[in-house]
Length: 134
Image 1 (cartoon, rainbow, N blue to C red):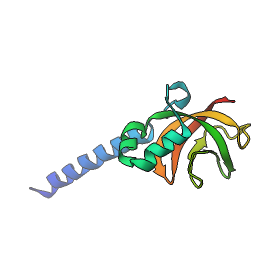
Image 2: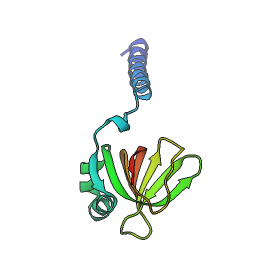
Image 3: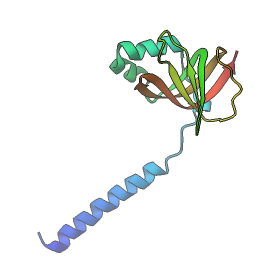
């Protein structure tokens, strides 16, 4: 094979990779608020991941979850995260909120909808919105 043909093949491959990367970067974000979520309470969701992470990933990962529970903690660093209480003393459901202006208090019952991104000590929901404070 000549150098010209090899160069052409490399350029075509690079073009394909660049096109795929461009399309993925410009994909629209999911509208979590508009999607119907899988309804579950915070303790049941946490236990599903703690007992069998692989099975829980199959059921919940990359899906919109509507989780109900009591607010354990509110973290306001560069973004706002609401941690929902579970039966585990150390860990819970960490909801990274879309809106930074939330009016919740610790101990308050709430339903939050978000995209499940997995289990890292806490079960993590991203792009979360408040469905209803109670």
